[in-house]
Length: 267
Image (cartoon, rainbow, N blue to C red; front, side):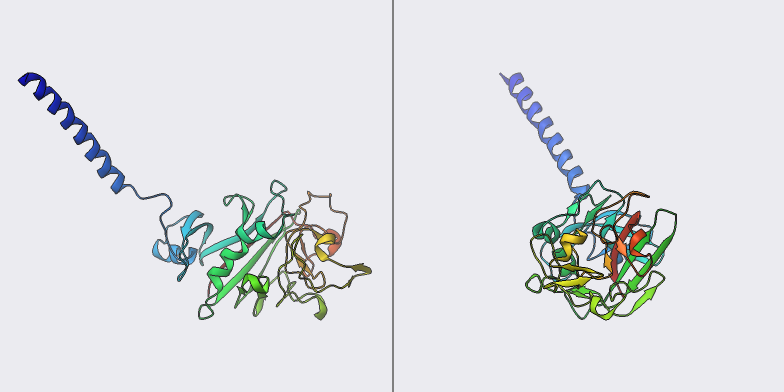
């Protein structure tokens, strides 16, 4: 009987030791979804050797954390909120999708209007928006805007940008004053905030810009910029209205780009 009891206690002791050892290892191992910073810029500042990839952030004053793709560049960490490289991910989506985000953070995606809003809503902190463009011929261009932020959903995530710099041209303010997208709300297939009733877009009367151009955007009388339309391969773009457009860099007839990226960082 005594031998049996020793055997039982010996077995129970072994189980306890294994359990405690496993628990200790679990405590040492960081959680995959633990918050790593308030934004990509802070992560880069804390860890200068950090590489580009997916990180978990929680902006100051926000309860919920979320994942973002950080581009860790020599000038700091940028939070990506739009990337297009092909037609794998459809951007012809409704309000809820654009609000909450969609796609693969490591590939083509839209981070979500609400996520960008909570990052930029504190007006005491200013942000820079950077737009990168690649054409099918190997050309590249960029546009940067200071004082970037988005409004609340009740204001349709109204776009605000400040001073422009770059070599792609200021397509947000457009090729004419009546195409200025700054200060306009976001439009999707089921939410029309483009100000058209109707609008004369070149020589076409348009009731809703999104029906002509596709993809959600801050349309202002159809505007001069729209990076969420249909993606086209080289030589496949025949419309001056659809596609990925930034008409201050490329003329509408040939302006469907190979790739685009939109990202932000604190100033």
